[in-house]
Image (cartoon, rainbow, N blue to C red; front, side, top):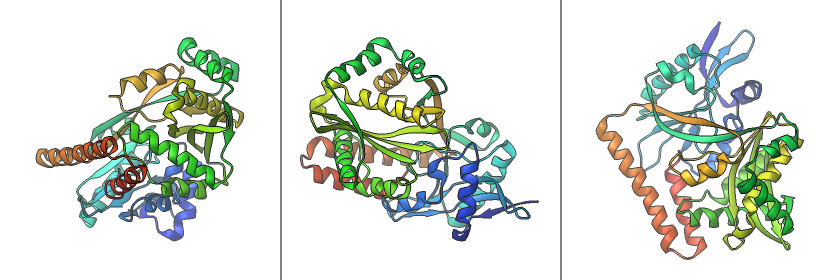
Length: 358
């Protein structure tokens, strides 16, 4: 008989074993992700829910859930903060209904204002629930089942293949991360890029913890493109089971003519293919970013959706949340455009994520 429980710390090994074994599992659903999040904000607490067969001591379904309560916003339940890929770990609509009921009960007990759940593989199960689709992102999944030469031929000839060949003619070199000093190089490239784009940058501690937690097991990779001995671009990949995902990218704008990011994506795809992965995704994209969507469509992958579902809020609360999030983002953009020192932008970004975790 199945019983619904809230996972305790002493049950984390059981939970992680379940995440690793389930088709909807992903790295950010592991219990160790809480330690990554705590490097960004102290206002986060894991409240994982699970359907467990107590006789067999096996988890059958689960919802990796976090409570977020900051001084600047109402308490919320989120699955999963700072995860570009996330799912309820379920196999049926009935399992989802059971876990949602438990999350609503938890919302009432904790005084939370809403439940936010991202879904990728399982989003179709939400059709008959009381949650509404609040956000949608696109991602582009490249199948790695073919030989690498066949995958190459699916790339757009003029915008991707020719660009990669051009980078190779300029003798761009590829290398992996060697030590934590390289992690600082990655973070500087990433931060400078986010600043140019008017977006907040996650703090160094976030990436350092990811490297600490997942580096030795090769579930995270940091890749670099070099030109004449100088690191001009860097890419972070996450790996779980048979899937690789491009998660964070940075490049030196002065070398944009060499297209180091395109070169790095190609090297990352080759790495994933040689590691025996079945798929590689180019990372999550806001559907309003038509330029980035156009670029990613040139790689010959399948365009899919990731959705975030929430309880339908009252109109007044929805408007307040929209105004708050818009003001925060516009504030960060203003800072990125007007404050020159890199250290100042890093400090503002750190505060942003400390209080505004999604």
